[in-house]
Length: 69
Image 1 (cartoon, rainbow, N blue to C red):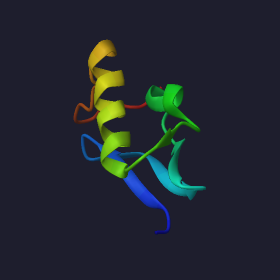
Image 2: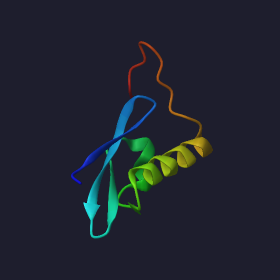
Image 3: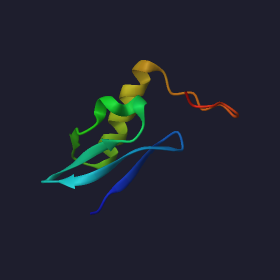
Image 4: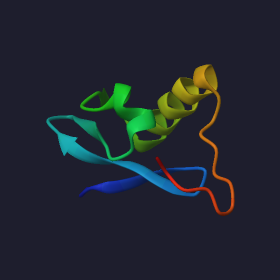
């Protein structure tokens, strides 16, 4: 397996890349930075961790016309 893009709410938030016998998550969006460099057993496990992380903060807002700060 090569890298795999991980999306949340239709937006790419990171990638997972092979790291020894696991997958390392590399965050590309600030709201998932807490998971950067964590290793997971699968891409689905990484997605579940993202959902769990963002559920505690409230999902990021993706409003039409909104400008990222």
